[in-house]
Amino acid sequence: MSEVDKAAPARPRFASGFDPWALAGTALVALLVVLVNYVSFRRYERWDLTQDRAFTLSERTEKLLGGLQQSVDIYVFMGSGEPTYADLRELITRYKAKSPQITAHFVDPDREPTRFRVLSEKFGVRAGVTEEGQTSAELAVLVTSGDKRWVINRNDLLEVDFDSLEGENRNLKVKSVKTEQALSGALVQVTSGKKTKVCVSEGHGEWSLTDGGERGLLALRDELKRENIEVESLATRGKAELPKECEALYVLGPQKAFGSEEVAALKRYLEAGRSLLLALDPVISGEQVVPTGLEELASAYGVNIDPDVVVELDEQRLLSPSPVEHFLVASFGDQKMMKALRALGAPVAFNMARSLSVSEGSEAEKLLKSSDKGYGETGIGQLTAGDDLKPGDGDVLGPVTLGVLVDTKQNKKEGEEKPGGRLVILGDSDWLSPRYLAQPELANIDLLSSVTGYLAAREALVAIAPRKVDANAVVITEEGLNAVFLRVVVLLPLAMLVLGVGVWLQRKQ
Image (cartoon, rainbow, N blue to C red; front, side, top):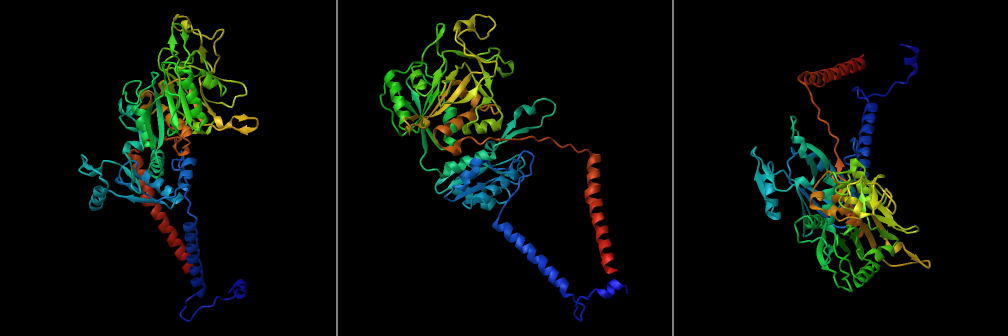
C-alpha cells in the first residue's frame, strides 16, 4: 500500500458493504434537480434561438398580454402534421407564459373525433374530409372570452408565394408568418370593450363604403372589422357640427372642395379630442391643381398642402412607365406608428400624389417621403408636354414629403397645453385601392392598420409586422442519407457503449 493510501482516511461503510457517502451524494443530486425544477417553474423563461427570432414576441403583444384582465380560451382545431401547427403551438406557449389568463386547447379533429364533435356543436364549427380521408375543421383557431368569439383561418397565419408554383420547380414557398399578428388581433377583438367607431366622410365625391369598385372601401371595412373597429359613412356636406361618437373621421379623396363652415366643423371636431385623416389627391382642372378647401385647416398646424403632382424619377420605384402613376414609397419616418412598416421592409404603393410641406417651427412630423429623385411638379402642363421631366422654378424639390402627422395636444399657447386630437395628412388616397391592399408584397394594408391604430389611440392595433421567412430547402441525396444513418444510428450509440464499458472497467479496478 502506498504512503498516500495510508494517509487517506477510510470512508465508513456498513457491514453489508453499503456506502453512506454514495447515498448522501445521490440525495444531494436529487435535491439539486428538484430545486432547479422548482426555480424553473417559479421563474418560467423560454429562449428563442431561431435565426430570424420567429418566436420573440413584439413589444405590443407583451404589453397586451401584461394588461390582460379577463380569461381567454384559445381552441386550435388543427392536426399536428399541418405545416403551421408546431410554430403555432410554440407561440401560444409563449403567450401562456406571459399571461395566466390564457388557456389553450389543442384539438385534432381526425384523432379526437368525439372531443371535436362536442366542441364543434358548442361553437358551430364545421368540418370536411380531405382527399386523404382525414377530418379537417373549416377554421384553424377559435379565440373566445365570455360571449365574444373570433375566428382565425389558416390563410390568416401565413402568406404564401403562389408565383413559386410557376416554372420547373413547383414548390410552394412561405413568404411571411402572421401568427402573432392574428393571435394578438384576436385578443384585442374579444377583450376590448365597445367597438371603436371610425366614420368616413361623404358628400364631396369621396371614396365610398358601399362601392366595390376602384374607389370602393369594402376591403378597408373588412380589414378594420377584424380589428374590432366599426366603420360607417358620415355625411359632412353642409354640416356645421359633427357627431362626437366617431373616434376618428376619414376624408378620403374628395373631388369637391369643402366649404368654410364644413372646415370649421372639422376643426372643432379635432379640437374636441377626436382624430382626423385627410387623404388628398391632386384634383386637376385645366392646367392647375384646384384647392381642396382644407388648406387653411392644415396650415393652422404647420402643414402646407402643395398644389402640385409628385413626379418619381427613380426608375426602381416605378410600377408603370409613367413617373406620376403607380410608384413605390419606401422611406418611412421614425415615429412609433411607423415601426411596423420599417420592420416589415416592404414599400407602400401610391398613385397620382401631391406633396406636403412642413413649416419651420411646426410640430408636424414627416411620415413618408419620395426618393431623392422625386419632386413636386407645379406646372401641370409639363406633365403632358412630352418633354423630359425635371424640377424647375417653382417646383418642390425632392425628396418630397407625402405624409405627416400632428398631435394637436402638443401645440402650446402661452405656456399651456391646448386640447386636441390627432391629425394625419397623406398626399394620396389611391393607396387604399383594393388591388394594393390585397398584394402581400406591399405594405398598404399595414399602413392602414398603423394609421388607424394611431388615430383611434389603440396602440395594440398598430400593425405587428409579419415574420419574414428565410427558409431554404434541405436536399439530402441517398448517399448523404446513408451517411447520416451511419453516424447517428450506428456510430453514436456504439461510441456511447464503448465509453460506458470503459468507465465500468475503471471503477471495477
